[in-house]
Length: 141
Image (cartoon, rainbow, N blue to C red; front, side):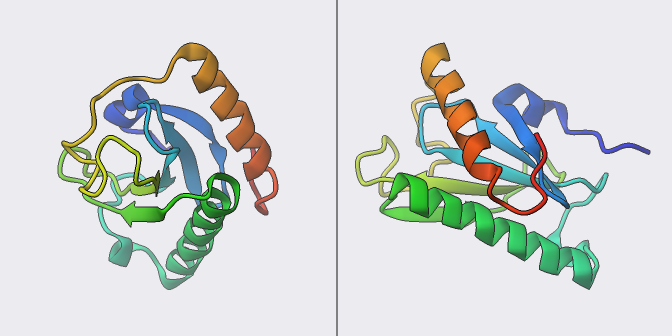
């Protein structure tokens, strides 16, 4: 069966493309940039449920995305986390954090203002991120 992105992620995110293992999403909210990697394995809930080869591929993709955020946005910190309490499909957040963001220094969950980026800023960030993701081996729009 083809991979099905959970409806909540589809609603809250913009699909940027695919890496060899993961679908790359961007949260629409005006914080970050906030990217999510979703391994394209239906009903996967935990990293330790992946094969060793998938785990290695995931770490490589996660590290490349974190490096992209660090190199291009100069955040004060990069938060990486997997909760899955509302969306059990494994998805890993990669959030560029700044001391000036609305949730600093706390976690973003439950501490943001829920404001969605203006459409022009959203479009600009999507194009910029896709251009930067093109440098990661195996990325496809």
